[in-house]
Length: 243
Length: 121
Image 1: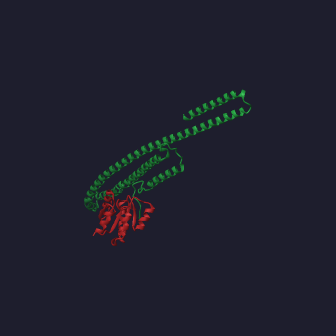
Image 2: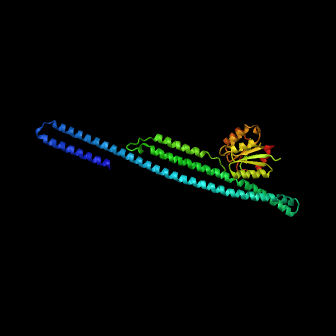
Image 3: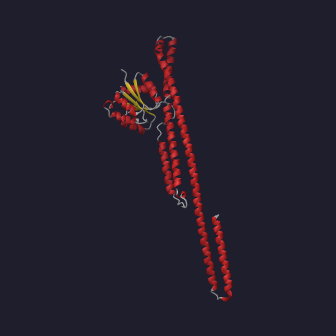
């Protein structure tokens, strides 16, 4: 809008200049000799050159103002986006913490129940062994039942360890979310520190610097992702290695 | 007399499962919540075997192994690491620290008892 107004003004000035020169030519034509034409043409050309320079300067100012405005808008969008994402990540992290607490509570009750059942089973184990030793059909059934119980207990002991594995995975996800939140915060800081954010200053595009900063932030994120102690996909017993 | 095993883990459920498994095999079990607690208990009473987690607050498993290996009573005592970590790099660090073996969670009770019997001789 500003550029259009400047161009119109320049056009009017140029037209006025030309008309004035033509009027002067008409006035001097009767009384002056031949070189007055050249003088008049020179004056008109000089006037138009001035007009063109004025128009160019007005265009440049308008472009700079538009660049600053656009950059300010981009910064505001980045800031808003980073803020919203940071808030979502805090919320997700807090939900994960709650899941972890619920899991801990559930597993505590499960372990207590398991201990109670296994204590009861071990109290009757000697009686079962005596009955099984009798060699009757009933004792065979008891022996088979005792073996099944022992196998189930083993399975329960393995499965009940999921709290630790899941807890570590949850902690890892929370660490990643916290790292992402920090990255968002850094993006906001970078955006706020950009030259366009300073009033009255024209932004000098520093793509290499910005790319380096983004690369550094991505590296931070990668490092947070790399620290994942629990790799288990299923609750199968893990490997054993003696050195 | 039953052999005494120090079970170190910051997770109460894991301590409970390790304790249950080893006691059912006839061992005496002392529990510790982290490396610092374990080191204190190991100095108070000489254990026949130490079974420790790696990732714990205050002092991790590898630091505990290194600290125990400096004590005369634990220079040759078997120390097993029971952890969720299964990377070769961590295992190598465990070996370099002086650990006797590396067990990945979740453990199978029967397999754990077999390994404990083997390293205790």
